Figure 1 (tube, one colour):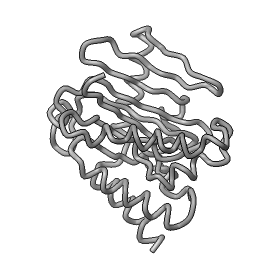
Figure 2: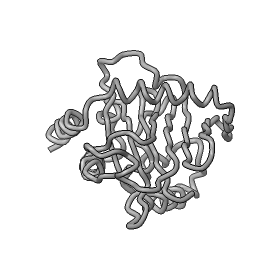
Figure 3: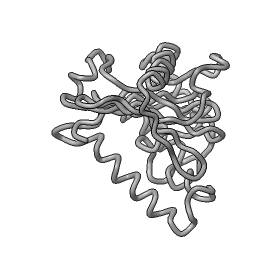
Figure 4: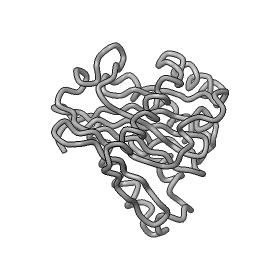
Amino acid sequence: TVGQSISTASATASASGSASSRPVNGTSRAAAGAGRTSSLCSRKPGLAVVHALLQTEDYSLGVTTGGGRVRPDHDERTVSLRMERQRRLSNDTEPLGLTALIEESVLDRPIGSAATMRAQLEHLLSMAERDNIEVLVLPTALGLHDGLVGEFTLLDFAAAQSIVYVEIVNGAVYVQDQQQVAGYARIVDRLRAAALSPARTAEAIRSRLSALS
């Protein structure tokens, strides 16, 4: 797909997110990434981590190593593929649009060493400065929220109907019924409305960085 737009969020026991033509740092998402055609939101119940498109290499390896979904001898290859996909975010002609909704507890969950966590938090701040990327934190004080429904990926296309990609333990299914897709889109909208602003999100990340110094 040409000009994709992705939106994600990490929830307490998961990572979830959303996307579409919404404001990003004062610009419409359509303007920030002209031609972008899809959006993604994903969440991993029971494992709250930074979305793969925003992971540093060391953090990604820490997430993958010892997990049950990737064979031990495929860890490095899996991480390498993630790093390759991230290049779409910095494409000079049509960068991928991304809105990442991250559960606040993800910022405190240690993955790898303290140095790995510092680098990951710094990377989040750096990526959030890009016009095509928006990082928003869902505060823990929010309590129970719509991001806790299960792992899913919402994909929007300019020239096709939106679909939802739902991961299961040993595979995935696609939801194409538009009424069901609209339900997932409403979840995404509510998550974005409940999240901290970009400025307050940056403050939350910086406070964790200070604690690691």
